Image (cartoon, rainbow, N blue to C red; front, top):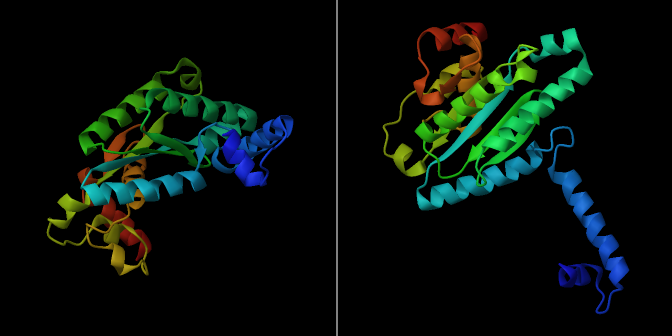
Length: 233
């Protein structure tokens, strides 16, 4: 690290105290650029760069990558009833539960508001569903969170380019779900964005009772999607 700092500040013989100061400054800047200070999870900007890299790796080697999108149910009502300071405590507790239970190889971030996202490299949809149920159960069972009636809905999506490219092209849930004008380039099942899949699954969970985990591939393409289709017609 010291040699690296010397190269950055362009000195062959840098003062040791100055180096220590520079290291602290760089560390602070890196922290502010990558971490959500309220929850201590990664921020979405950093997460997006990781997602792009991991998707490229998964596609190159034919591996499966999964993503969880978590949303605190009725968070606005909780905020309105108990105040924003209590709401922040709830966000922090949910973040701590997520961070404490995912694997070292997983990446968790605060997406924004009351939504969180977890990227799981080299993880099948079945493994991702187990993790989602685990997180949902821990959040619903936490005494502090339960005192405010906190639950989460979780959308689950997986991607394996090699397997998906072998499937026949069909009219996707994405095409039927999204508003008119959505780019048709994303409508074949092999090209649907991983995050959009998880978002669709999350919306389905919200519309079907909340406090549940739903995989994108499990979604019924009848009642829910037809109702959403009417909404945008």
